[in-house]
Image (tube, rainbow, N blue to C red; front, top):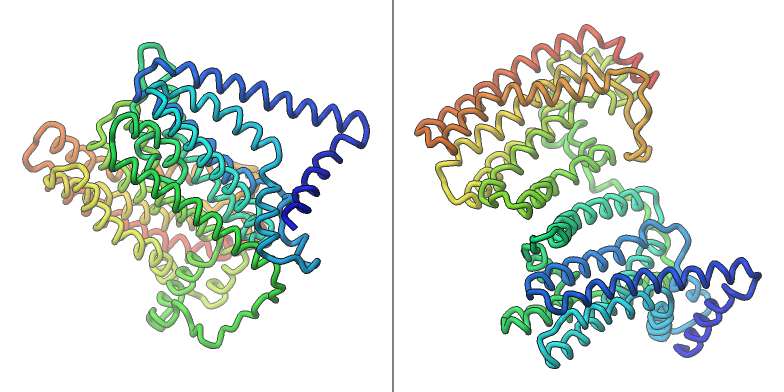
Length: 521
């Protein structure tokens, strides 16, 4: 069976050049393009033979890991099933074991393998520490190449076998965007290395060596540096990665070979969800519905899933030379600012469901307070725990009051402004069950005004806390942290209470207009 599948793979490739000169020209052009690009890159990498070891690490580990990330992400952008799709063999009675091995070996035949073979020559030549390191580099290149091809195999099969619904593909797209954010530090370090008189920091390469994407690639560098512990870690991570990918591949093939009907959803044991934990009042009802929306609505989930990855935005600054200690204080306030910003258009997110609030004559205060339940439930632990972690990374516990004050100021003032803006300046947004990335075009400037008021107002309200925090941390002002905490919490609470009160009045007065907007948009 394995030999038959390999023969079919070769025949499939041969068929691409048999049907007309146009197909032949495309195939030949693709092969030549891959050869030209990969040979050029391999030549540049092999030119690092006489460079310092840290520079070689920065390039081959950083660039190679970025290449492996591409092998894992690109298959999710395709719609056409891959040649290795096991569902094509599921109806033929083929043994699962033979199908797994045959399809895996057949997927190795193609342009990606050709590109990896050419690139591996430059990777091996980049290490100039003797025959022993060169031999290790050959083994590392083989392991990294097999890992890349297995990543592509598992990703393409996961895309075709499991991710069949639109929601699943949207989540896969979000994952791809987040992986691209992870690649930003690699690109920054490679750019630094290419500048005259500059060298790579090696920070990104060292971090990637602990991941499945860079463990095998970093092995020769650790052997050359005599770091025995890191060599053992590289071998273990690379071996576990290959074993996990092969197990995932076998599991996907097994799933494709079994015709399992979709289980029917049974809600008997689900109860009332969040409504069981809120008070039986108008405010509690709005809070329960808001919590349910934030957990189930894809539009809220797509926004929430980005928040944990916001700390990655400071990584390029650290690579550029900014102190990592100071950068540790930045992510939590940014996350609080974004969390306070999220509800600023929640009335538009309700769409036609807003009629329930209007028809039941829900008081504006109950509506405004109830909608604050999800961001406060997430934001309060974020401020408390995140500030402690950030201060620990900063290395000076005197910065804790400043971090708490600034983070709380951004969160509370943002939620207060959101309570007003969502009722006063709603604008068209994605409808329920639509693609969260499909933002409708706006004919006016309402969206720009609403977002500008939100960000500008939160920054203005938190300016006193930022000023006192800066004086305390930079200038050594003794009471700076205390005043930052007091001003952040004080101004934030005032903005929250005032925003809820004003937003309640605006919502009650404009309820019919808001309902008309929801029905129209």
